[in-house]
Image (cartoon, rainbow, N blue to C red; front, side, top):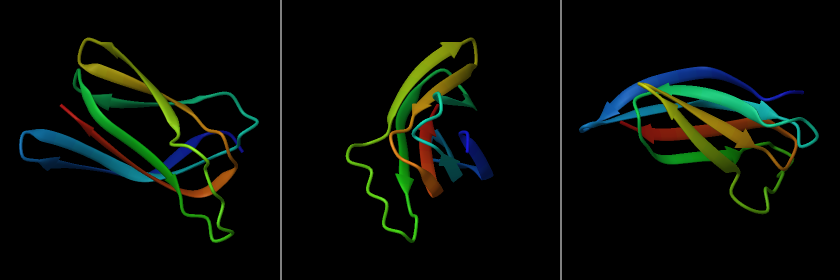
Length: 91
């Protein structure tokens, strides 16, 4: 299963934007990408909530690249995740 997002929601938190939702991916696949508006990311948190108790040994690594008002996050998953959740705080 390649990296995928679903149930993506957007909200505001004071002067910041919040994007959150569900994600899934396989450790064997190449890194996945996800875009958000704005030019700055303050936090990007991806977790597994699989009922099998999958343990991600370290935080999922994310790199950030900005072009104009669009920021692209590249997600480097290290485990097979079917039921993941993510939260991105950006401006």
